[in-house]
Length: 226
Image 1: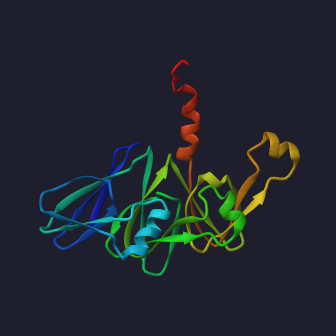
Image 2: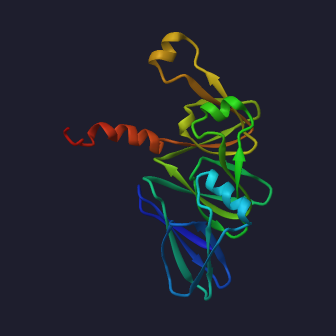
Image 3: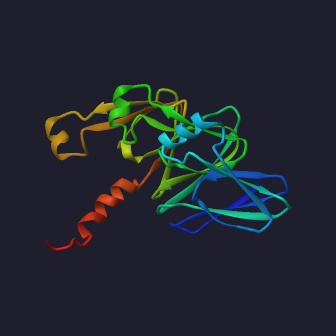
């Protein structure tokens, strides 16, 4: 499988498949495909896995697209302004994504739900207790809100991040919540809690969470006069 990402702030990943190659995606993300691609829709892994995907922000059903000839193309588009991030999984590593992060992947990639183990991280971590876990082997494409900043943390290195800005992280990252110190900082600063990330591992930080974008737009939305 070869791919190209186009579209700037409204991106689409275009995958070129050879005969027999299969892509999977969440329902609704496919923008176009050439005529010799066969589509099948099923739960993908059984009912429990389907329910787990729904709880983690995606759909119960997955679509599977298999090329019946060489050189067939299929495009998957992001549903929000931002970036599409490709990550190569080699079968040994696992990544954790925010809800709705999964866009599409090669057939060897597994999508499951992931539970935050710590109460504080689940309550104040920006995305709740249930996230998305991606493992297996192949290329996976993830949606990021806004631009993306990548940081590689050394063992023991710590990074404080606004919880809503964490898009993806490797499973080796230790994630916890730290309360902002100082009453004035809590009342007039950046909020009550920071996410504390500790290495080793890589984290992808998004510049404009869709929730923050919605908050910025709301004051400009006209309301009907009573």
